[in-house]
Length: 132
Figure (tube, rainbow, N blue to C red):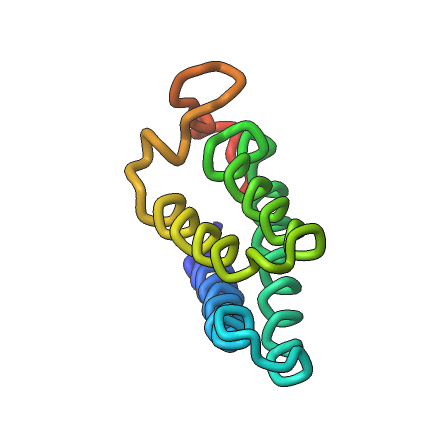
């Protein structure tokens, strides 16, 4: 991969991640304090769309993501967010749980993030197998 292509991909993913965090921050007040939905819905949509983009990039890079703890916990986070509709009275606590999980997934050690629930051990992509 050329250095130019590497930087374009890296900065694009960083830009999408920044928009994702902006969407989360923008919707947080509305969710945590029960503000009218119309005031934070656009931020929520931004967070969800960019989240799907980030998931798609991860899965296209490596199918292992789906069985590694980082992927599994991301899917659990989506289920927790979906439960907003089932138990709306617990929305703030569910949102806080998702935020805390996100920190541990993003900043936890590689041994935790790359742990495979299927293989019951850390599993990494072989260098020759990685898509570039």
